[in-house]
Image 1 (cartoon, one colour):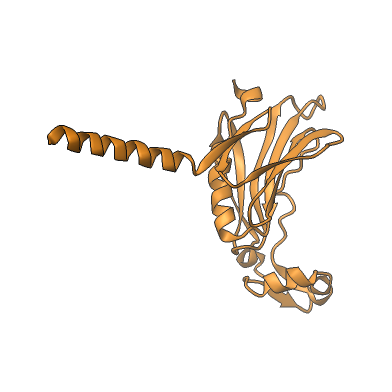
Image 2 (cartoon, rainbow, N blue to C red):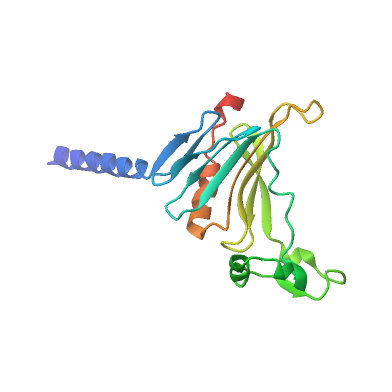
Length: 195
């Protein structure tokens, strides 16, 4: 009887581990691999001066990466959520709708005594991804802003115009997708650059 119980326990462990492993898959993009939820699908694009690709989620969120000389630092254009009437008028209807759920400020003039720090759009933290230091960016307000990473230099340098950077990002992601994406970004293996 004890052997039968031991067999049942071992079989249960194997079944549970197989089920949990099937929740995720590894997508190989050549230069790197990333482990993502099983339902996420690989996208391929044709880049002009860099390697571009991505992922689409079941919620139709697009997650795009760019590896090359001109990969942009998605953290550099981080403007606070403070608008004068003209800049507010320039927003799309979708942006205005999303803005209603965020901490923002609309003023007559952008000059004056405004604490812009209270209205930051993003949070930046540094995290080691494989053998590189990466900036991870997340929005301060759920579903409003950019989520992703930026690695300044995978190889080369700016002085000789040989620098290769990487960014991988999505915009206005649903909270579940954002959490899954940040978790997935931390699994990246940059096999062409680290190994």
